[in-house]
Length: 104
Image (cartoon, rainbow, N blue to C red; front, side, top):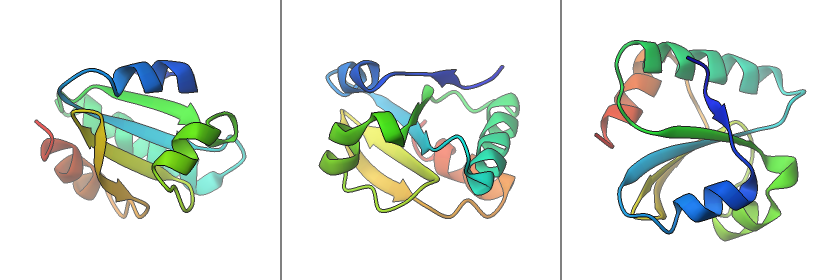
């Protein structure tokens, strides 16, 4: 099951809801972003139960500024609407899986 594309407005609405979730920020022409997204897909297929959305950083200036996103790919791990970790290096499926499991 692919990661659901979300608009900036949808992600901002998610931040108003209590709980844990992740947001993957990317740009369409970024090869590293495509690789990171594939790793996320595999981690989800392995049974991670964390809600995950993705959004194109080019269309998310409020999120970029509020979360101080330095580069893409970026996996923002959130609890109760606040980033608890911004991961820029997704070295392996195992790393990505472990990061997402932290939120369960």
